[in-house]
Amino acid sequence: MSRLDVICQRIRIAHPSDGEGPGRSYSTPRWTEARVQEIKTMSPILKVRIDELERYPESEPWYVDPEFGDGIDRTTAYKTLDIIGAQNVTVQGTPSNLSDYCSGLWYFEIIPRRFPSCRRWTATDDNNHIISRTQQGGNQVPPGWCWHNPVGHRSRETCLHLANSALVLGWKEVFKREIRTIIWDWTETSPNDFLTPVKRLMFGPSDGLKNRRIQEKKAVIEYMHQYFDRRKGSYSASVKQTSDELRDHGMVLHEPDEFREPSIYQMLNDIEHIILPQRRASIASQIGTYTVGTIHRPSTRNWSGKLKALESRLEAWLSRGDTHKDFARDMFDAVHAFIEMRQTDLANEILAWRDDEIAKWEKHF
Image 1: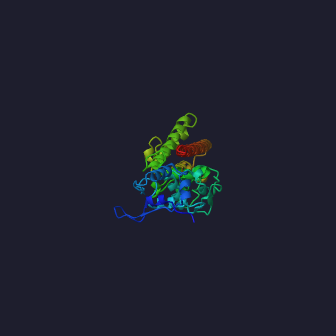
Image 2 (image 1 turned 90 degrees about the vertical axis):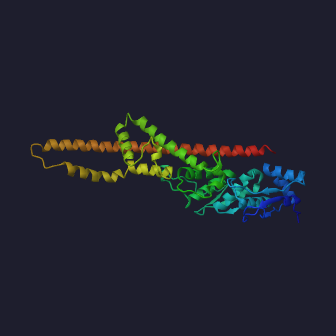
């Protein structure tokens, strides 16, 4: 049986169930001598810490005790150091469980390609899809405007966990899919939001994703405002009508703070409902109301002239309705394309940031 490395006794992991103070208990990893040498090749943090312990045997132990905002808690630290000490361990479980391990890998700067076991890690999502390096789960994007598409999971928090794992492990297609929800369709606040690398990337540690959601919502509103400005010449009536309809519902495109919806997708669903409130079904009833309200029994002498005037007004009304619908659909097509471009750019930006971070870790070897 392989002998445990004596260095393990000088690595103290704060016990998850203990509070603060001098009475706290600690656990130690169970790594063999051969495994310790392998672990040193996986992470610059672990390499530096183990080298120091080996070089200075009389020095203080290494106390592993993550603090609030570090990206993991004590339980995750313990589980991570335990699992990297084993060989050929496969993580299979819920997205939340996988996300915890991935947060631990990121915290300890463990380079995925130097830890081959993680290539076999999998999670089963809410719809029993297997998510892994080779199985991307339900990755088909339905046709239509992006804000019509369902989340794909029963819980948006599942999207957060999968995006977090996908970022750490480099599952690019999974990440690109899930980032759409956690930025553009987020309608809840997760208490575990701060415990993920996704939450902390490139922004402040406490409100990174929230800031990005606000930025993207303002970008969509600004794009719609610019779209209106570009169409004022050819669609002046529709631009005015749309602006009036939004204003009547408390939405002004150049005042983004007026939009109180919890997500970008919900905001666009509401705008669509205001601008295109089932117009095909309502035209007939509106025409009926219009004719009943405006036609009075005319004298025989004036009947022909009044009928022609009515026909002219109805033709203009119907024409304006078709033009307005065309304008609205063209606008929503453009907004959809704009959002998809932003989603692709953001996903690529974050994945490039991830690759750059790991490349920095690699330079230590």
